[in-house]
Length: 264
Image 1 (cartoon, one colour):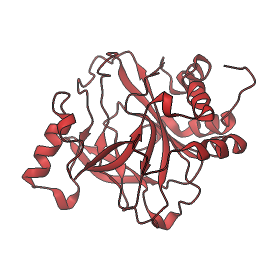
Image 2 (cartoon, rainbow, N blue to C red; image 1 turned 120 degrees about the horizontal axis):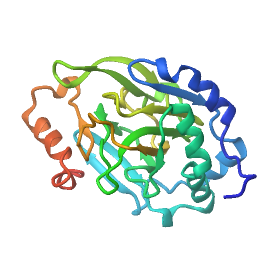
Image 3 (cartoon, one colour; image 1 turned 30 degrees about the horizontal axis):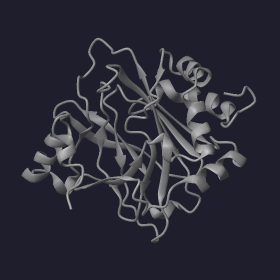
Image 4 (spheres, helix red, strand yellow; image 1 turned 135 degrees about the vertical axis):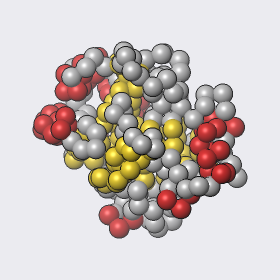
């Protein structure tokens, strides 16, 4: 990676981390103007059309989104950008800010490009804990929103919920992050970090909630949850629904999750 390639606003990242360790309901920071403008434009142009057959489609009662982590499908600007975010230079800087040694996931397991169309959904959930191939623990997410057409009133906010220890599920919705273009959310995934889309996506047809998702790993904590898939929770109107509970159970298991990713 060229020493002169500097695609992100490191000053903004450092400034945002001044509040990371005392944020509620779990450690997080919001970084505006994350990507340098000239590079951002090139990245936006390389996103695949929503109807491309290359996308992996999650469509069921608790999630409706498209994702792609295939390096061969990325254009040159995207390839270089993601390589930088997985580079030793950036990972060491992020490790210093977070306060723990992090490792890149070069396979982008669950990461890469994400896209939500009108009506897209992502129920409150906690991400997988132990990487199913590397055995390391997922520690930090960086989500970067890159859709210039998205507006506040279109919804699609990322909600952050408290953990209700009595029921092992999300409690109060504490914070919402609008998917404003060139805004990044960085958060710790080891703190019962319930997150998901908290406002319905009601954008016009042809407008998509596009984002980059980059995940970082660490040596497993002593009390690390062993789950290898995301654990979802029902929305208010889905509570006490036996079908939803069974879907959540199947979705959370490594051996059963692929059976329910898509339910037409």
